[in-house]
Structure formats: C-alpha cells, structure tokens
Image 1 (cartoon, one colour):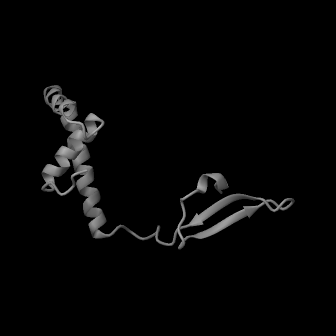
Image 2: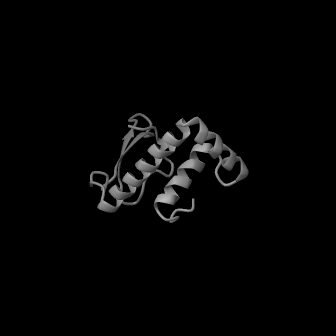
Image 3: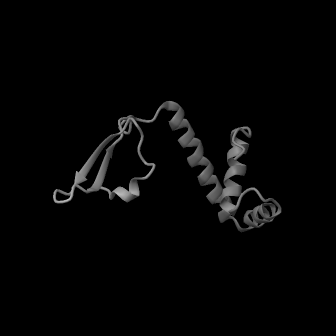
Length: 105
C-alpha cells in the first residue's frame, strides 16, 4: 500500500481505490489503486511508436559515441535554444528526420 500523501493526482474516476484505515482513530493511512486498463496489451499503433522511439534513442546514443560527430552536434546544439540537453537535441533531430518532421517537440 502507498501512503495517502503520495497519491495526489494519480488516480482517475475509473480506478478502483482500496484504502487501509487505522481502527483506533479511523485515519486513512494507505491507498492501493487498481487501474482497469493496465492489463491490456499495447495496441499496434503504440507498438509502432515504441519501436520508432527505441530506434531513435539507439541512433542518438550511437551518434554521441562518435567523437567527431559529437563535436558537430554539440556546436549545432549550442546554436539553438529549444532543447536543454545535447541528447534531447540529437534525439529530436533523428526522430524528426525518420518520421518526416511530424513531432516538432
């Protein structure tokens, strides 16, 4: 069971909420949630998105492992202000290149 103070905003109307109550003062001291849709397997669209994300992350790690390419990417990253980390800049650049610029985040 999770302490009640850590549950703020983590449940929805569709969740089944189980609580633990202290008997001597009727204080709620623990909460357990049962999400009704957590056991469903990912859809084909979700699997495709996960595959694209994993592939882009692997290519970003490989690009940052190469010292020459890393220096070039670092110079490009310093010239922009949108991404706060070098990895996020490289990841977005590679992800957008693969997906035709659909994700501009």
